[in-house]
Length: 81
Image 1: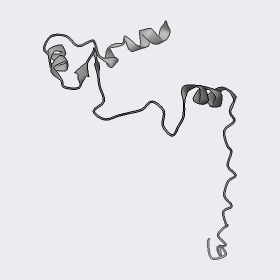
Image 2: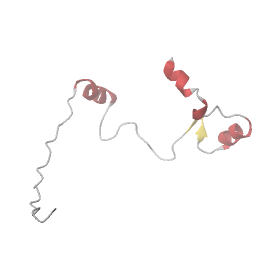
Image 3: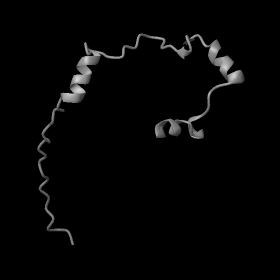
Image 4: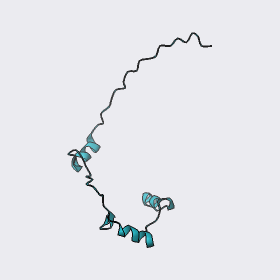
């Protein structure tokens, strides 16, 4: 319930009405009560499926990378005050 209340705050705007709603409905990209992407935009890419993604999220372990070795810079600091 708290999340719903968060999105009802004024800073998130209000539902369109009047001329703004009419302009939205006239848009070529607005069909069936929602805006449609102009190009194909799949939910998953690269052969991923919903079950595969959920399995990875729930049971997968992220790959950890080792930090790269950085060579230290050997400076002559004897001249500094």
